[in-house]
Image (cartoon, rainbow, N blue to C red):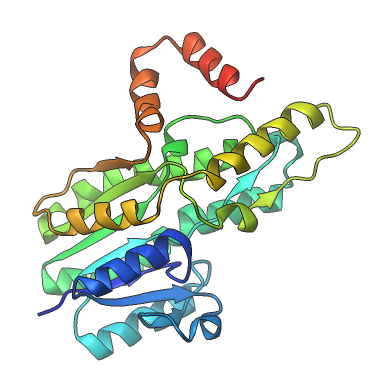
Amino acid sequence: MSKVVLITGGSSGIGKSMGEFLTEKGFKVYGTSRNPEKYQNSKFPILSLDVKDNVIIKQTVSEIISKENRLDVVINNAGAGITGPIEEIPEEEIKNNFDTNFFGPINVIKAVLPQMRKQHSGLIINITSIAGYMGLPYRGVYSASKGALELLTEAFRMELKDFNIEMTNVAPGDFATNIAAGRYHAPLLDDSPYKKPYGNTLKLMNEHVDSGSNPNLMAEAVYSIINTPKPKGHYKVGEFMQKFSIVLKRILPDKIYEKLLMNHYNL
C-alpha cells in the first residue's frame, strides 16, 4: 500500500520538489497552498490550507483521511521568511512570523495526531533551518521561530514514543527557491542607524538564496528519512560550511563564534 503524505506549502520551492519526488517514488502525496486554484497543473493534488487557520487545517486533514483512510507522513514545510533589525520590525510582523513558522506546525501536528495514534504509526517531519541553530544578524526573528520548532520537536519525540509516532527536524541551508520574494523585509529607512549594515546583509542573504543548492537534495533527504525505521531527531541538509557552522558553534567560545558571523556578514 502506498504511503499517504501531506506536505504543507507544497506548491513551490522545496515543498514542490519533495512532492514531485515522492510522487515519482509511488507515494500518494497531497500538497497544500493558500491559493490552490493557481496550481491546476501540479503533479500531485494541491489542497487549500492556511497554517494560521485551525478550522481549515482540520477540514483539509479530515478530507485526506476520508479519501485514504490513513495518513502516514506529514511534512510541515510551510513557512515564511522575515528580515530586518529587530528593533525596527513591527510587533505584528514578528507575531505573524511565529504564527506561520511555529504555531502553524503545532496546529497541523495537533490535527493529525489522533489519526496517527489510531493507526499506531506515523512520521512527522518539521522543516526548520540551519538558521535556527544560531541567532543571525537581521534574521533574528526567523532564527528564533525555527529554533523554537527544533526544540519543540525534541519534546514531542519523547511524548509520542508510546504511540509509535516518530517526529524529526530537517534543517536546510540556502536553497535556490523563491523564498526571498515571499519574505517580510523591514524597510531600509534613510534615517535608520541600521541602514548600511542591514542593506549590506540583505543583499548578501539574497545572493545566498540565488546561488543556493538544488531543492532536490531536500527531496532525497526526506525520502531517505521516510525509509528509516527510527529517524534521528535532527538532520541538516546543505553545503558543508553551512552544516559545519553548527559544529563550530558547539566548540568555539561565544565571542569567537560571534566574530566569525560578523565577519561573514561584513559587520
